[in-house]
Amino acid sequence: MPPPARERVAPPPAVPGSLASARVTTPVRTRAQPRAAADPRADRVVSTAALRAVALLVVVGAVGWRRGEYFSGSADPVVVAKAVVGLIAFGLAFLLAQSGPRRRVGTGSFWVAGLLLGGSVVGAVTADNMPAGGVVAVRVALLAGTTFFLVRAAPAVRVLTTLAWACGVVATVAAVTGWSTVAEGRLAGGVPAIDPNDLALLAGVAVVVLVWRFVQDQVSAPEIAAALFLLAVVWATGSRTGLLMLVLGMLLMAAHIRRPRVGLVVAGLVLAAAAAVAVATTGVIEGFAARGGDGTSTLGSRFIAWRASLTWADSDWQQIFGGGLSVKIIRVYGQFWDTQPLDSSWVSLLVQAGVLGVVTAALWVVWVLRGAFRAPRPHRILFLGMLVFLLGRSVLESGLFDATPAFLFFFALSLLGEGGTRERLRAEAAGPDRV
Image (spheres, rainbow, N blue to C red):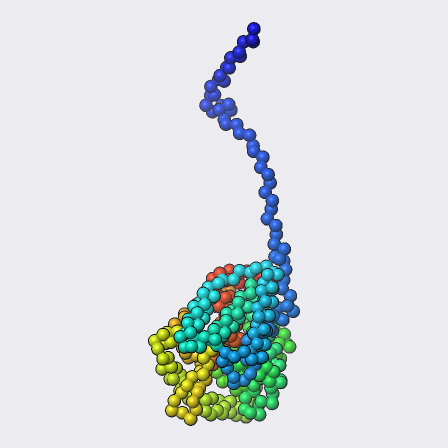
């Protein structure tokens, strides 16, 4: 007979509140999650030599190599050589950005620059100027991309000071090799063959950074000597607008000194006294202010070109979009000369990118100034001093929105002043990355 089946006995009901009523759960063993691997690039620091090499290539590729000549679309050896230098700088900057920690950088500046460049390309197409206008737009975009990778590769102050160092080196070499041009009235570059105003720009941005280091009490005796030499270069170029805006930028930065050291005050008084004696005894100020010029080099001739720019467009389409960034000279009537350079970044932009370009650039400048005011104090002093110099000279001198060192610094300040970058600036201002 089969064994009787066992009856199942129901467990006694659990008393509420007793241990038996508690739900017993068995802990589930889970596999330990592996920790995220640390970024091997986090502790890497871009070497000074590598950063300086790229900065030097960027500046050399951005300056002019021939005085008084403008790009017309033809590919001669100089144009090809400059393009090769710019591409090498772009590639090396990209490698630097990939080799170290990827610092946070905003991208809003690219959208504004894209709108500006895109409008100018449309204008170049309508004006039948596409080859030259398109090439210049690509060069500006390439310079913007190189600047972006440099800002990502190193701390903000390091990038700006290194670029300024490169400008100072190029300005020194150009001034020394072109010293014989002083006999003609204005110092111009020898190697490379830079115009006086562009030479003053290179020397001026280096002086701005050196004065900022002076305000921060970080300057050394050799740097003071370098600043005095570069100031002499700016003076010798005869660039009145550049010198005036440089002095205004220096005064703005000096106003941020909270408790100046005794040595700083004494040095400032001695320099002021020496300058006053020189002015009173030599009359150099009168000679500088009355710098000679005739034809297209006078302020009056600039007004002639500016008035001609208002009626330059042949159609409403060109009035809106311009004729391309390669337009540097405008035809004038009623004078003994037929053409006139557009010696103003803003008047040039009206002809090159139309009303759309001028409005975009104006809003861009306001946005950059807003970002500079919101930057941490050490960065704010440098940003504002540099912007006073760059924006002030742009009224009477061209190049702020072209593939030039002026645009290089303006775009770098635009990137660093964005909201997506300012958080990083605060960390750099408080930590060892500030230099």
